[in-house]
Length: 229
Image (tube, rainbow, N blue to C red; front, side, top):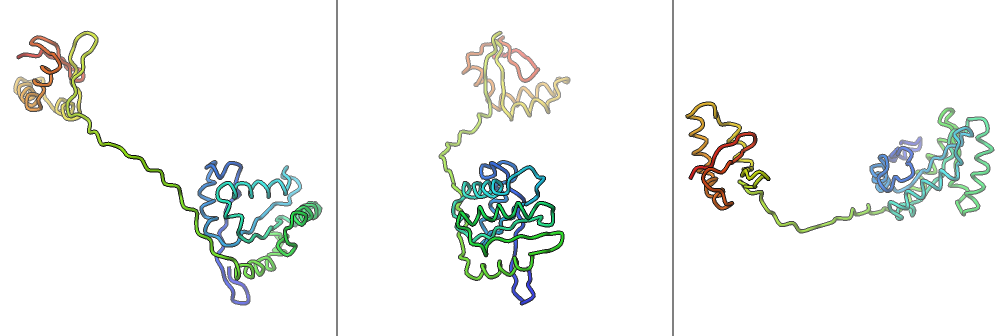
């Protein structure tokens, strides 16, 4: 934003937060992280008589979500901006809203009314924002909590031998399953080559350790063969 007196500043337009935003509902957390980088808050509240909501409730809900995310955000200077003041009935709503804010101690010169349609009140609001920015402190962003845990690396065994309820020994493992998928078991040469691969992987010893004896059935995926000593 650049004003006619040469003053400029950056504004971040954050969509309306919904209930539960501080807990991650919707895109709330992403928007709230942007709020952390600001120094002054412009809190826009609709005065539309037909939106079915009370302006003060909307104001309180957003303040609640800001505080739930990081109560330091509520320490920033804030200008409360009543919007859609061009609508019929908006003036009456604003009068009640402003009275409630004043009763809570909000400064009168921090309460504005604007219309985006007619641009009414926008220039005074921007000048006030620039004025407040001159003395607004800098805030450190909230540090995200980091959870740490110790894990012991336990590699998956290259070969695992289990036994089915029918007594069949079942071989599993990435390496052996990959070799099986690449083997051409329809030809004798391919079958013999696969048998040598199994032996080099230690399959014979693993089967013996698991209690397999000559003649027991062994399965790899959907392929079954007899263990031969």
